[in-house]
Image (cartoon, rainbow, N blue to C red; front, side, top):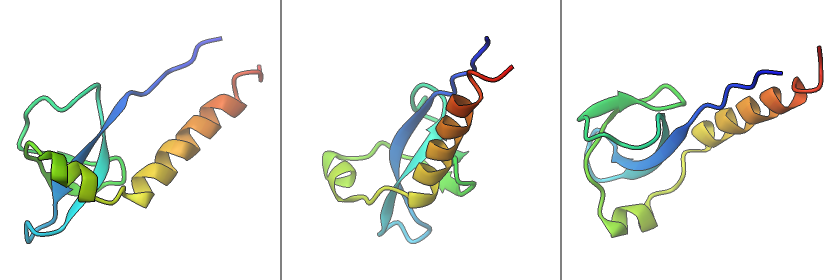
Length: 82
């Protein structure tokens, strides 16, 4: 029985205006300082080191959350099947 665990991390990122921030999920263990990446939900994001206030005020992307939940549910339901 082989399971593949996909790692992800969350990071608040600004929208194109720079005024509204959203917490998106990204593939990998942690942010490595890159200036841009594509989120789990497919949004191309400019990335920067967020402040504590950015973490607190940024809403979580519901699309990223739903995709990660469905991936986990899909992987969990096939573990016992052969």
